[in-house]
Length: 367
Image (tube, rainbow, N blue to C red; front, side, top):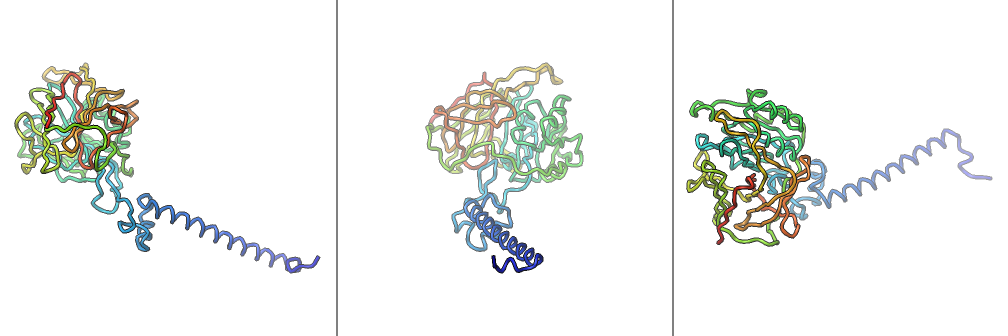
């Protein structure tokens, strides 16, 4: 049987075979590259930075192509730059005794959590991820509630002024990066103008550097939408009487498009005379019991139950949405659903979470 291939030497046949493989491989790479570029053109927010740059240079990504903007995971707002900061969430424990006011940085945090502590007082966990602050405080000690709440943020960084042994042991045990004052003293400083123990301050940059974490951004805690299409009622204010020293009011200000916070009839202001404000207030009604630990005044430290389910009130856009919170285990993210089971969507922006003891009545004033 005649044929050109039979007459070629083995070396020539090997060369042709190799060339054919290279051509086939090149065609395969071209097809894969085309499919990859096509995918990233449809979903540019998922592409690596160098691929997005290429797509934008040929007009396949960016606002002109209707590409969705990158959004901060803990606010739902567009990022200030082109990318979400490649860093974990940073939580910092802030005091709320009257002697600690005015505080710094609460209006710069992505999320703020208010929790009950001893003697009717409350304290805050200020959570940063997209935002930064050059002054945060006064920083105070942690409680068992903190790691239970924060572990839903993944390997978050936690800055606080120390705490009981069960707290300091639990923080790393649940995967948080511990940068408390004892471990990372250089990241904190004392303000000589403030009386101790209300004088400890830090910066977000100092704590992120002390953590040396290589983790990226956390998953979102909430769902977001520009408008809520479910059932809601218009309200003027919400009163959360934790106690006589923590008598919280949130009033809707339509001009500012935000909820403004007060203690009783006294506006809650920060350093610089800035009023505490938030796009959303999530009231999570929780079971609170007394632990065996007593503070120096003999007050028991509260234990907050953060799994299971309970009532929830979500304040956004001058309205309240009634529903429930659900969290099967501490490894899960808390979800908030309306009465018909639909996940409640928050307004893009800062969110305050109020961990309100179940015996405290929520008082809503209608508009």
